Image (tube, rainbow, N blue to C red):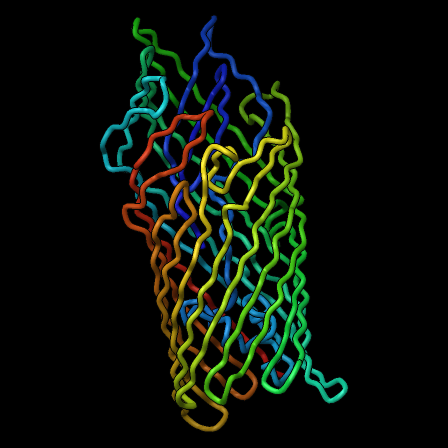
Length: 466
């Protein structure tokens, strides 16, 4: 999933420190004057322009609204419930492409007063941000085997785990006791985190299978870093005496050599010929990433390097599928992610929540996500079938205090031949008038800035059977 973002900015002696999360909320400039505006670098922090957004795998799963824990009958099962791999009857190779286009509308055109003692008044004029980027979503090879009269399936896959892409343009119109700042900010963040995954499923008893997977997290395949943020700003500062001073700059934060490992355990229990129950636990883990910060418009500036630690929470899922006929299937999932336990720890040891708040200054609740989907098969002739799919879901986003509401739906179609399957899915996720709740004690807090988000994602899967 890809969330709404909020941002806070601080420039000490002209240098910006950026913390941008979920919804772009404010820019705060503290100006020091001598003969001009001086810029200096501060210790780097853990920053996300787009917070970690988990990515699901496969067009078939996406077509049924990602309610796939109890279905999980292709190689992408390793991403949803590794126990589902046991349903593969032939070796298969699969590849999945994904393209996401998102548009966010920020602000209502109203003005708001900063939530601190600075006296700043912030103009949150309506702004639009968007991004559009294709990527490799999933690649795998799965092979079934029989050992000691028991069926097993092993798989090796490469999958997209987290996405950080976004493109933000935001006007600055801040007023405080001493000056008025007007200009623009453009923030481009690209990248994502992928994983190499080994999965194994086996029959534990008639009708019951168990599965496990191990994920080794790495930088994205199509870029030499995990994520990178380029921030350019152009600001004019007008002081009470009429003095006008230009400010701004161009800076880059690169996060690279992302490394971590975790896994998941799952079960799939066929209660009878039409009903299956599935469950999965993805255990928490700690990852590390290098952070390189530099001012691109100042050749005399120091390149600052740090190593950060990210502590990801556990997640849990339970799914139920019902097949009343050979052609019709219903599925439902309920997942929970304990986002309250997420921590981003910078090089100084300061801990931040997933909202960007310093740990201890706010609370974040875990998030429950219900999903339901359906699939109907049109059997044209033996060895050839057409599948139609649909689904809906409620996918809230973690936030300070209480989560923000996001809803979504999906449509999909699939063609299956004797040795090949082609699946296409479209998924929409939207949050309307989602209010900012993020606050950081070091930054300007402008609460209740509305943001409308519409995220469109297309998946295309190809599966070759052997």
